[in-house]
Length: 224
Ligand code: GLU
Image (tube, rainbow, N blue to C red; front, side):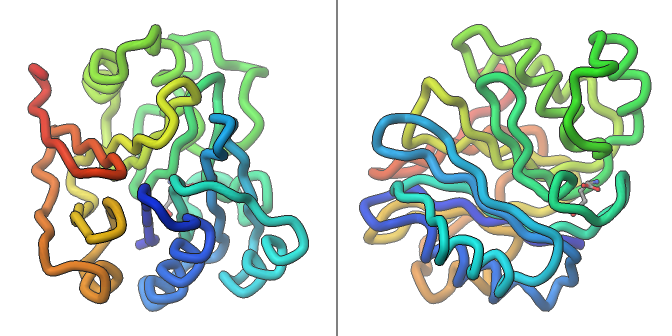
């Protein structure tokens, strides 16, 4: 198991996500990381093997400002425990956190010509690369086409460089709960994190797209 968190709203995302990742530590993990979408739209990533407190130290020295972000505690299944294999993974305009296992990641590497293009050994970065392959400005189409190609289990939090302030979520088996709070929208692996912010939450149905914006949440089926 691992933990995922996402926040978009009016507050600084970094602090909210670091606190949330600490709450999720009980799920077990070996690495931690966050990606924050800055006011200029650029996505910046901080991640490392080790504990959430190591990530916090990294951020204290070199933090990431912005009110929208995704965070992850990793339990390595594909690729060793290293800074580079920690999530989030960015490929092209797409930044991803992933909980689960993409069983057919090797065949996807061949099918989409990703040999030599990847920076990590994870199955998760392959999913980011496939999303990037299909992304041409329509996030729903890219997500729909990608999940149809994936075999395995997944809970994804996704940022697109050119859609700042918005988090997309999709899942199969692995859990995602989405909440509307007074200060923005949040997603997480379980309600233990969200309870302190909101009582207004729902479990994202499998193969649906959850959209988190500062002023609310939206839910789409795969047909849009
Ligand atoms: N399979 C992915 C990896 O090894 C995600 C593992 C997880 O759920 O933390 O990076």
